[in-house]
Image (cartoon, rainbow, N blue to C red; front, side, top):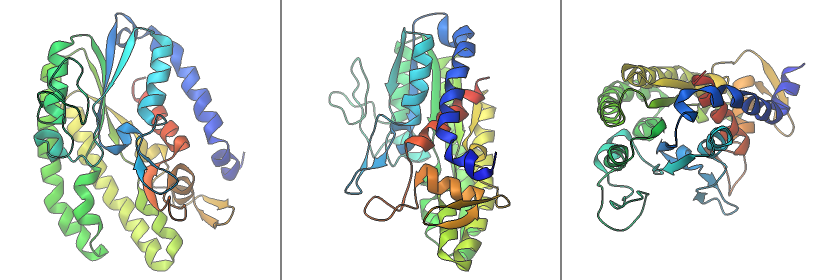
Length: 303
């Protein structure tokens, strides 16, 4: 099968893979031995953000969390989903609050009323203390910490990252230590390595292609920090960076209306809103197909 055919049919392949993974999950004691909860934490990806027809970022039911939960719930009808994700969250605000607020009553949720839990992490820890049957926690966090760096000229990004990455590592250690302490050793935790939206810069010409290549190299540094932080807390890693072929500049794909581009650029165009014209694009968030690819990476991490 050609690379183009493989890319065009990815949605069907992902759907099949998700279905095939279900029996294995059904047999896993982490998901099926007792009634429980799937607790989802993170930034905008965790709440399925996509641009609406006016280009406004909007939570959807097409996120990777929704896809993942649908497959887990098919194997265990007793499983309940609790989403605490907050669009725009950084590792710092996840700990300290400042973007979303959380209810402190029975069912915690973002932007709620009642006694505030203070932050997403505080809300998660409170939930874990009250509900001992949490079987799975997923988390994507850290991408928004890079925002001050990605707007800089390419020559200044590395120096910026040298300051930001240690803080991400320290914050992630705080987050994961708190989750593991509150959830215990048995709860499954899966964290995420990100895809690289900046690959879309390839389409703008030679300077953009240099930026795209630099972005992948820097994203690998960032993702390695995340992976180390997750693994230090005995969490598994959903390798979305690899699922999106983020480092593959070698294989070439021809896209209608765009032309021939590297595989990683093609995937960003096909699986996110980055290559879509205004008002919906350019937008770094995944589309429904991209979120399905992310869900599959989380499933693969649990095998």
